[in-house]
Length: 119
Image (cartoon, rainbow, N blue to C red; front, side):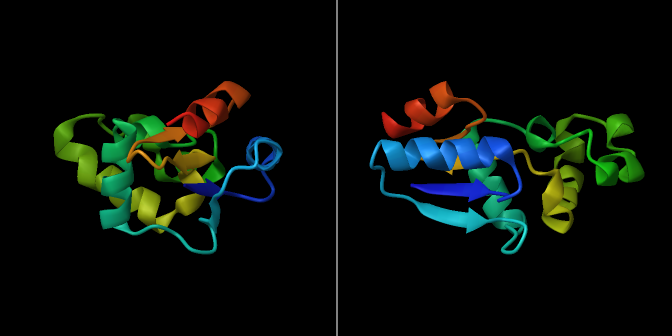
């Protein structure tokens, strides 16, 4: 399993702590230093079963600067959202865990981390 984190994020640190307590085997990806490209984002979104606008941190300054709250949330705008996430990785919700069974989830709670461990 892989976990996408921002080390400054308390939810990310909590998820890592729980993974360690459970003895999980995982790889850390500091996605701000090693940002995913559009193809990888598409793949993770498919694994998540979500659309790009579902994983955007809308309160970030960059989101406000881009005017994301006014962007359409429809299929025709999907690629625009994916490009924005690739170009501004700080906008990606965190942490994201890609589970061993091929699924993924946004692991903002202990329950979500445990769910990833059970997959």
